Image (tube, rainbow, N blue to C red):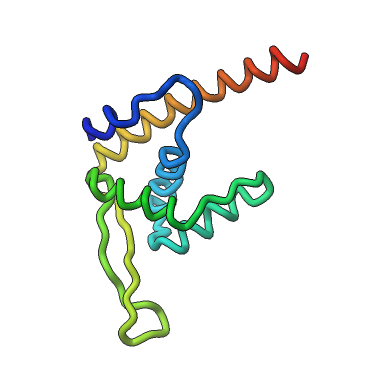
Length: 125
């Protein structure tokens, strides 16, 4: 986790898209929504009216980084309605790493909210 924190040093502006996606992925996986396409559909649905549509590749990059960091684990299950087709499912890995990551992202989101509120107040009185 330490190397990830060092890699994503902020420039002080807004949160990176992948970090934003990771917090949703973690939360959805905690709620037992566990495979990639389901996670992508849930995120797209959540932000449908806001114009935010993350790419398939960004979701999987975020999932892979969370796997590498030990935040998530991955297993396989046989796809419903199929005898042999397997689907990768994701589970929470190290709960301490999850909590640390969520705390970091919460701080980043609060900082971003403050910046955006100042921009609205300063430019649109």
